[in-house]
Length: 275
Image (cartoon, rainbow, N blue to C red; front, side):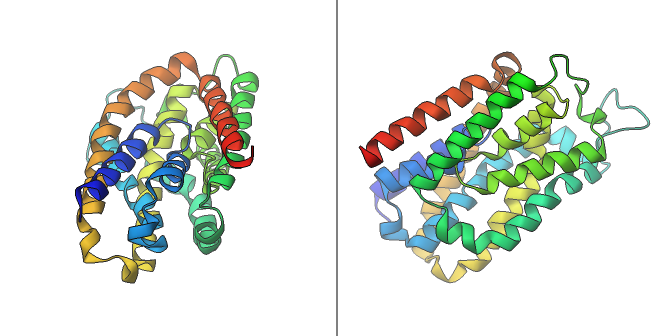
């Protein structure tokens, strides 16, 4: 594999790692950068290129596990979080309930999404509608959120946030944008909603990547190994950098600045595509 191709994998990993946890849609950004500039489908093939966009997110997901390892171990009873109460603790059940809706819809509509929604035009739609939801969450969410810790999330709220997460199956909508907005509207503060979003991302993205790999295994050439490896490592490193920064930032600036960025980006794309 040539150097220029590996450089493209590095760039896509950078884009993924820096945008996965911000509510701007990492998948949407990768589609924009790839379809309008890097054009990896030309040497990977459509199936392998789409799989790369999903699998490279595993690098970002691994970064979540590294940063939030205490909380991850606590979910399976291997670590005790300081200050947890005897009742109402956040546990694996909350995560399972939260991922069920998107998991079901993802399996049912996977083929339709892969074949029809991975384009810059659909990303523009997702960017705009997702931005509107984020602005609504900031404007109409409670001024003094009642839920300021993962350990205060009920199973019912976990399921409702999971329902909102289904919107992120549309590329460009943003999984973190959808779930953080849903969480804020349900009474979570922005930091707690972001924490829940990151934890739910681990099984959701691991499952999506696994299914995509199985489906497109015959289209992945052994020569693509280093392309996938460079993208994975790049996403992991840059996600480590972005996670802690975002968790501090979201508590201060909320969602609206990210929504404005999305609208500006969508306007630029509309100008490039149609004018």
